[in-house]
Image (cartoon, rainbow, N blue to C red; front, side, top):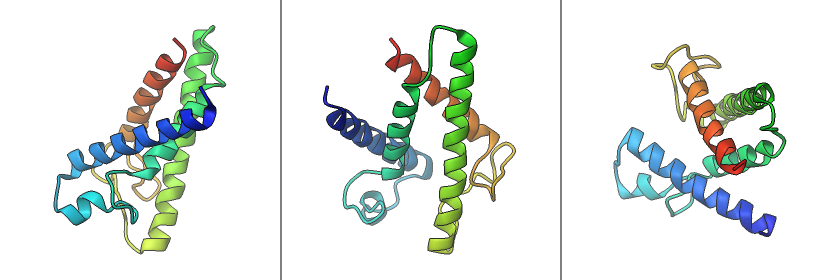
Length: 136
């Protein structure tokens, strides 16, 4: 498959899944908030699409031949995603002047509540599934 098409599909799938996930967590409020994500008038959260593309790209460098290398690779990708979530949260706060999300109520929040142990484990599970699917 053409890599541009592959990554476009991944971007759209993850953006839609992210939109569904966020609306399930925060609830559906109104049409304007439901369909206005980052100025787009469609059900997409592009940050999830970018994260999905990054995870898929980085998973190409993980070897499944040795379990130790697989675990280390998943931990490295998970750490990269969490560091990016921290940086993007900080930049979002500087731009918007308010917290666009907060993990204050989750286990061991850090980075001004933009990442937590709970989200780290969640990302690790998602990345493990993606790596497992792509390596089959």
